[in-house]
Image 1 (cartoon, rainbow, N blue to C red):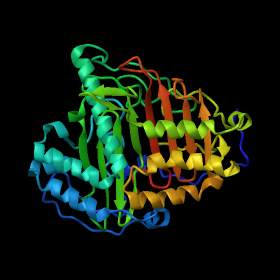
Image 2 (cartoon, rainbow, N blue to C red):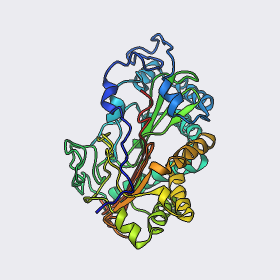
Image 3 (tube, helix red, strand yellow):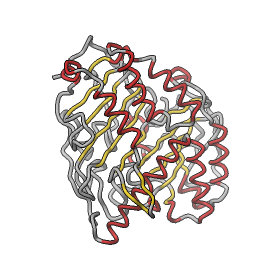
Length: 400
């Protein structure tokens, strides 16, 4: 059972459903995807971005890379890759299932020329840190590895496998499990790095609000900029298998996240572990693809500020492996913000606390930062694989 030092009232969270409504007071650069020459209307950046953002974003570099990529496209391709900032497709066009099980937004990288593909990757290289970009490259390699298994008939099936059971209290309307829903254990016909997509919600601008959405099977990034503020909420990173050899090179995507997460939860004493156990069982992410909320009103686990400084350092190391995927300056500011909220941040677990347990589930839940780490049985191999999610409860899909 869970235990809390004190009850905490969660701040109200505007759900992703609000994105389907025209936001007259939300700032963005509107773009009509039906016309590449549509007029762009500049509006003010939301006040909430300044209130909850941490600054330090390298927006100018990302806008430059985005502009260079867009310049390589035809008008028809621009119409495909550019959306209104508040288009509801933003919340549905990402998943841990490969295509065509869940369709993605924007342009498929496998349909681009080599020059266009390289320019698209330069956008992600600008948005992410060296660590984050290398992780993305390795996750894409893992998808190529699964594609090779499918081609050889040695593992991956031609249709989704490993149907997931919804976690206790989670919605069941397509949030998890089965070929028709965006959650679940992976699998599917179209593995490989060519099945990654890129799109922009809002015209990339140094002063407006826009989102870079990039992803495929086991990675999905929603990185939103508003002036000098940035949020990467939500970002999915996952992998199967944990380790593999490809072209005589060894890969271990998410190794830092695995080690830091297990290190943080295993730093708790026996009594703290008992208090930190979350009610219910979780065989996948609670707030993963297809389920944007609400966040739990009552956090579960143990209060991070009640832990020793050494234990808190372990939690910070865990948090850092997600936040540091962003460009370095913004990541440092966001990390400082999240650490400052440890008096309202909880860490908890369910199922297990070891890396070799396919039921291990760990959660960090603060007024801003939300992390889930979910071990689960292999869907396309016999090995454990992970799904992880990072969200910022104050800026999911941007600011509103």
